[in-house]
Length: 121
Image (cartoon, rainbow, N blue to C red; front, side):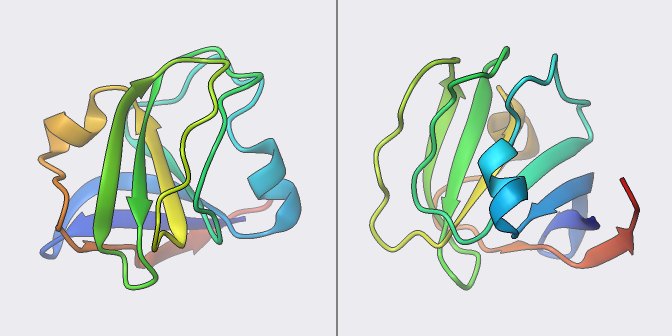
């Protein structure tokens, strides 16, 4: 599994972003996990809408274009919801609820996802 970093303007925001760019990783997403560490997230590619069925905690979802521009932020999405499709979205970043605001991520920002490392799971 690839682990990415989340950066904005070169500044490290989150150390561990799971790269969910395969069918199975996108399908499983964050389902059935009890929670997620504060320094962790999940990047679904390609993806333009999500659901939170099978989840146990609220998340912030950030819809991104192909060039990682923030198109829409859906804050504190609870379990068992289907979220709307975002026009122009190619990726969705899932973070703990409140993380987008805490990290200062806003619509129009361009995020960076350099690869940190690969791990076997």
